[in-house]
Image (tube, rainbow, N blue to C red; front, side, top):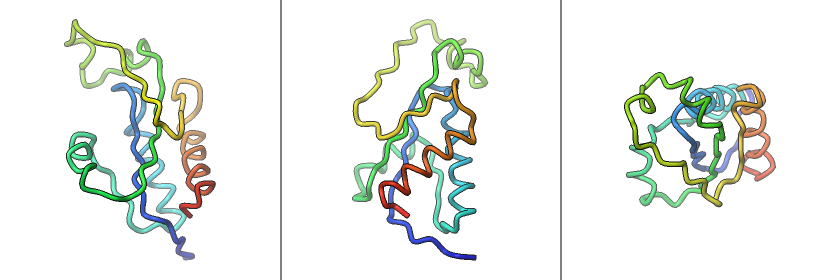
Length: 123
């Protein structure tokens, strides 16, 4: 199999709970591995936040945008049901890619992320 050369980078998926971050990030990992990228790791957000200050690698932020009412329907962790004091998600202005998970398929989201990596010359 042809092995792709990829610059080390971190792809950080942000967004509301239930927006599709985990499913999309897992599918991106699978696609990168199919393309020959060998060292792809998924790190839980809490662990990532502790380690982010220790790295000098490139950071690519993918904002998985999804309306709150849809995230509430997908609430398998019961985060929204258990909270009466939910505050609005603060959208940052540092994101590199916006994936509207309620409007595009997981496959299209993966294509968007991988295309961005190719454009940024990470491949």
